[in-house]
Length: 333
Image 1 (tube, one colour):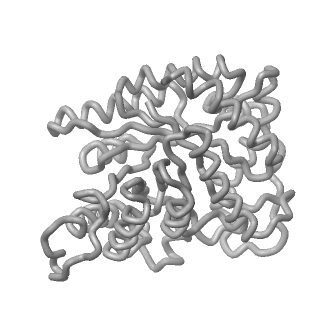
Image 2: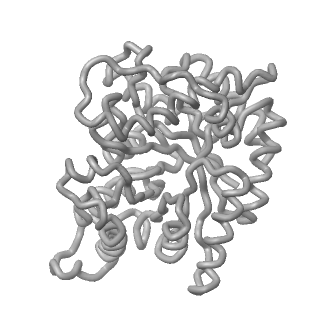
């Protein structure tokens, strides 16, 4: 079992007066700290044109992390494949794989915000064929033959033969089954234990039907550890803010000016958030992760903890992450 640190997004919070420059410098420092603490991978995430400046350029950020680190894997969770030129993405990913000495994982997703597609001149209903074509283009570009139909050789080639692994982030059954057919890995998005079990079963079923094996399983969950038994009370407002901010993305097109605060959470919403947040004492967190690991039942399962909370006190965030590294990760080694 492997452990990832993420998802670094460089979002501005209404209560955080730091500049974008400072947030991006902190992001690089966090990647170095994750490596120092013994995490196996560090993850970024992508959106575009958000009022809180959610990170739009994960490939350059991955290259910067590669230059600052030596061992840790560098994952994108995820780049929105339909919004990229496939050939350019193949070139950029190959470059990051070279800079990182083969530590890059290219995570791809379909995207879901209509106005993101419109801003890039793309059509949302074409997102599935565009994603499939992008994966096919990358793999052909990273191989030894000419890229067709262009008839060109994409150079330089990645550090690893065949290129970096491609993981697909998905939540719906058809998308998860597609990942099992065409990707090297599947990345889940904060599922509860029951949903996670169903998702893993779809992956296994699809693998059996198509004679595939060796797909990497992964997922990311909000995480917070505390030795005082107050973990949920300390993280609840931050988990709520992150969840609300994704919902707010539907309506913030073209929004400028002061950033809004999240509305108060109701009991139903809080219960749903609590059900998918891994938090508690180190021993309690170990027990919760063990359930997910047992469901995965695989040697290649990566648990990505969402330790990055926009607006949380930096010292508190670092302390909870360090406690996780010192008391949780060793329980699985």
